[in-house]
Image 1: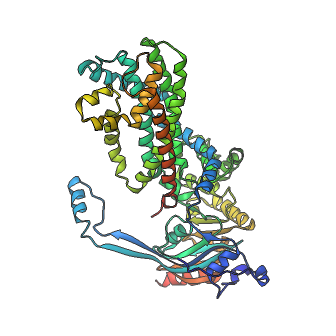
Image 2: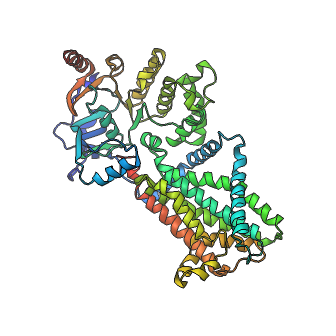
Image 3: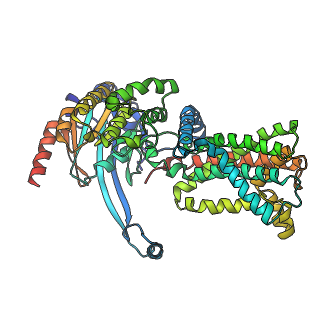
Length: 268
Length: 298
């Protein structure tokens, strides 16, 4: 936890500085994994695992090892890093979905995480999911019904027939991802965290999504985008953060960071 | 681009200081009870929409569809009638056994379905909890609403059965409504308490059918509660009289049957019913709220 700091009013000289939206202060995340591992497949195995539990070593995975960063209004930040570098864990901590083992995160409103496997009800129609999602994000009923058509239109799921009235389980993975993005980006979020959500969409949709992200930033929001596609980060982000083995390796203008990252990946 | 070039404009300052200037707070802090309740109220449309969505899903794959809302309790009552009314013959001392049994099965069935849905209400909506922040109590409350809407149909069937088996309609029948309201309040608290327990220990879902069955046998669904007194120690029999499900079932029987089964008088049952509704309803809500920041984490 942070030690109490005696605060004083903000000096007038800071009025020209960018306004922070999220402050991540020396955050560590340690996963605890019981190494007996694996789900039991038979009653006998389950019993053995249970009996062994006291003896098994709890292994620790240090996924994020002290990350400090601030995001500011109107920024689009690309988060880069090889597999297992802790990008997704960091996003989940920022969204308040995973507690930080050490360190503090400050934000005005809880950042929204838009992930590939985030959540809609598969047995419900797309339309009903949109209404439910809008209400869950705190829209009023009138607003939800009003925005519904617009969201479905943006997602483009009705381009090949009336899919919005079919259950979500009949959708292709790309269609579902598009609908999720359309839904999550319909509301003005102060901070929107996107975890590889766009990688499933086709080129046409990606263009529209990039356009939408620019709009969100203009409305004084912050967008953090995790992607392995350096092209899409170059196109949409003005700042990039390169995470490697749970630590920030580089933080700065997109061009510099992406170039260094690409060089690193080629040599690896 | 210009902003990105600014690496850390607040270098050298404590993050807590900067956070305080711009009104940022640490994430994952539970709101106070009053603020939480207000927030929950503003999500009422979501709760309603979620409840009807779930209701639409329950029988989506059954050909008879929502007819099962009525058929399930009817078939249940039929099985119990065969077993207890015919085979074991517990009907001797009871005037209108069919109505007696149906009231028990239908009233207990409501709380049972709420409890079973409540246990799973957090664990089965994990994906949603992990992607959107909303007051989590919406989920168990929606489960109660789904069960409540399912119950309306079965209550009508219950009243028809009671009427057909020879009971006369009178103004006392209207008192069923407040009893059901109390029971709904009680069940909602139960669902919220179970939701928190079920979120912490997923094995609870496997245990629920046994817990509920034991509870049903202790609630005088198939036989008069007086039977207990003949078979178990006195203090246990008295304790069983306080069983909330027995209280609600006996209250409804008292309203609908001309010859209510022997047991506690209505004057004792009503305060018990109100008491249970308040204690469990409010207690369950507060208990659930105290775990609010932990749902879906870790």
